Length: 465
Image (cartoon, rainbow, N blue to C red; front, side):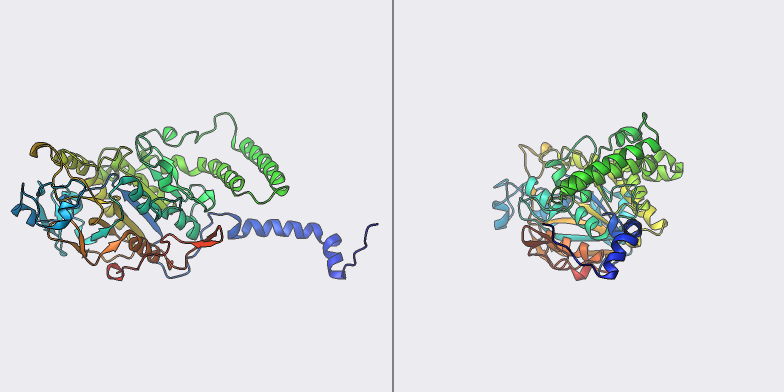
């Protein structure tokens, strides 16, 4: 026997007289609601200085003592063991002092010292905030890459770009909120460097192989040559209906939801991707400002993506850790700096001229630095080993104090000594600049509230403008 159910007059009217209208209204409100699209732009809980980020990743670990952290004391011990205990415990035990083959000079009103490897960037010294007291945990690439990108050296955790897309969404629904550009293939640990981990998959970084200049190779299948827009829309609508019907019969499936969103995003990318990645649409004088080469083109694409509302753009130097200079560091650094120097200066200048630098945070650095001692059989082929206990990153724009040097390593550049900034502290400060308290910005997973900085991190107030 079927039990009868009594309804109130309001319930009965809602079910029979207004049911369809309620459904229609719900659909309209869902379309208008910012929560209906996972990447819809959201306001941060705190006042923000930055709206977007460009992370320029010097893959492999750039040498701080040859670029932005001058150490004249190394000259006194050239070819001899350094008189400090830490040098004996470095990876290349017993190595000798290796003074930088490059000259440093003060630049701008701030007098920031920059190596002669970067003549163009040095002219932007007054825009830079150079942190010379960085520390990571491990002098090995894999854990340090994950620490810098995801805040955790070994376990699967969301990347910084994924956290920001989760918290802020994106200002362009026709492009991914997080794009990672790395020419010639994936870096070590591949897509783990821009993973969303337990966050919804829509927040994961989208990889682009920027060795290509043809837009249709940069973004594969960006054009559908078989179906019109209208036919593609019809096919996607049918696919969405089938997926929704499948999902209604089962528990909420985050992987299916991420796939649905990915199909939709791929369809919408046909509108903006062709334009964003095509640098030939830039005036000739702008392209000349950035200069030739893959790195310069990446920087220009990054600016174009940010203009279109992408939240986080990561620019990698290349897949094979070009900054991992265990030997022949002089010739290697000359090539690497030549490939990026003009483009870096152009990026800062271009953002400034367009009024974007104030609310765009630019971060340059690698997963760690390199030893002030030599590695290699003879002086002609000397390089430097990994060094996580002290290294340098620099930032510009986005609310950091320009023309500033923060912290210091010891007189030889071996260990961070003054105003030490751990990677967790860097992440806490970046989140603050984008309007988040790193201790409160969490995601509930497996019965625990996770955050980018885990149980660590302190805001570095001295570098805030």
